[in-house]
Length: 231
Image (tube, rainbow, N blue to C red; front, side, top):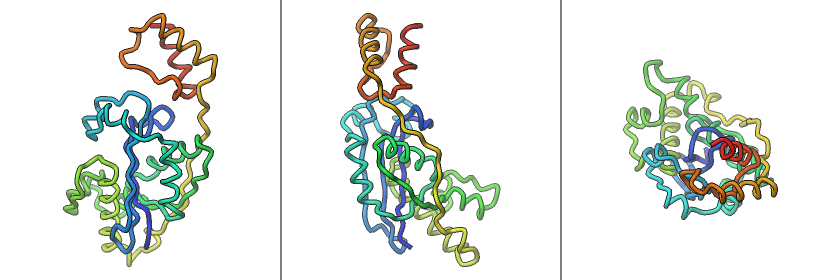
């Protein structure tokens, strides 16, 4: 089977308030990589220290990243109509779907979740995180918590599980429609931008890190205005 193994790194866990840092994908054919996509994204926001510690992606690396709006069409071309595969796939897909909805691009896919497969077939006492499954199957694809490396690890987990259980239960390994409820995030309004510029100019030391006002969503701008007014 041919599929697209994917993994994303983000600034956090909330699709509404956090942003994509890195997209990695491998086109897998007969269990082997047949093409690679990798892009480091400028999130236009602060990268938390916890994320840098986890991924190794620093603020400087993120600031030098590509614009998400430039990356998405290339990713769309690379992915074609292939089913997606990932570990806890709905999490990564929700961030991708949000990005495509914001860009007014369609991104409807089927997918295979190796976390669900692991929960279905492996013993209850076996931990199901990707790092634990790497150890279980002696998988070494390079740096942990980087997108291409983790995408490849998920693909190899899938191949091992399919080898062990696929003949008995082939339907469990078939791609299924991915469904997430995502609404377009509206950009910061002109009045919000002007109010933020005024508040920040009047109180330049209120925030510990700079804010890229032009890349805020309307809801992010509202929360930031509220925060500045009450600091």
